Image (tube, rainbow, N blue to C red; front, side):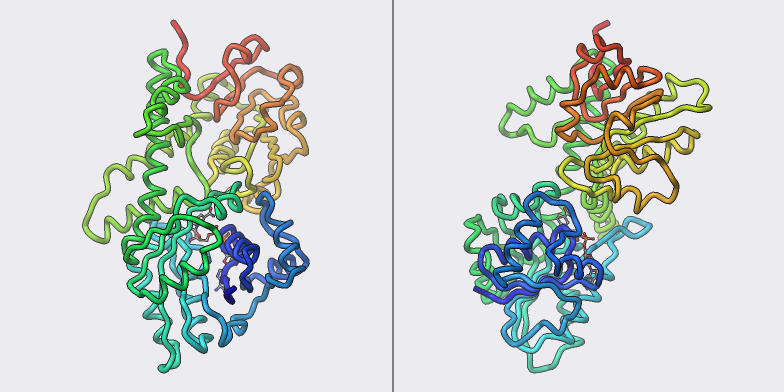
Length: 435
Ligand code: NAD
């Protein structure tokens, strides 16, 4: 059992801290957001993530997990301090490291004995060195420490599962002592360790996300070609995915990727390339293709709607993917803004993300409590998140409630024939017609 501090109680910090408590460590999660900490102390999770709230409550009760806003919690017996704060994009696509740097300063001022500082935030190559410099500048001279890169690969929506069943734990460090501390910390997870230097570990995270994002943009370009040639992207992807060198994951065509990680990390890697005088051409196109995909629903509507006066559009799904309430960089954000630009009235429904969309959108739209309400009187419906509950929709009822028949399936949830039979003008992604 170790004493661990996790700074930042977002998707990564809160899940990591809670799972470490679950395997027996004593964990204090720290955040500067007092409201979050107040909620957490009462066992209320500020984010939606399967199984998380139960686990938080259980570990609070068993006194392995506590919450605080104060870095003074760092004490003699603290062995590991995680940095798990946000690293958002700056206007120009570069990575905003201000939260990480602020935490590094606070750690420097708070550390009272040797500790392993673990950087779990996604940070550009060279950040371990930078964090160590900042800590050193603020630390008592007689105290030693190590900074380790330990990028996180959990997926929102399955974050708890992923923490217990990750493919690998990447540790970037030149300190044998620090590596041993982390091996011990993570031992109960029974996962493969991949030990390398900090620079490689930092790059592994960006390379992984940029590669997956590129896979999505690639399949979306194939989908666009399918539409022109009579191909069906679902069949193309299935046929491709049977090749084990390719694999069947991340081959679903749609309205593009979003979320707090892929867009910002791809931009971040592009910026790193620029700083080192390297033009990373593939990922530049990955981003460009993704922007085009997000505009697809509007292009389809423009082809079908001549006069936008009084047009109502229903949107099913706001989160960037199922299983989360996160709408950061979700395609829904761009699509809602585009529709508003056209003067459309917008009705939306998401099983869990209505509130998070409401907190980021600067203008009013109609938030509905169920999918049927969202499509009522609409000229068109756009499905943007493949929540399992949408597969159970009563499509005849949807059709009856709509004013017109345009149904854009941004995630290929339904079958073309069935949608045609029910009277929809159905627009899936990447499914060409036979003629
Ligand atoms: P988040 O925005 O959900 O949470 C960050 C938290 O840090 C917030 O609660 C914020 O209040 C807190 N914070 C900021 N500055 C602080 C400070 N000085 N002291 C204490 N708390 C502070 O972020 P997230 O989604 O958990 O991501 C964290 C990092 O992990 C990012 O670098 C991200 O790229 C990376 N990551 C995220 C995911 C994901 O799926 N969300 C997956 C892998 C890696």
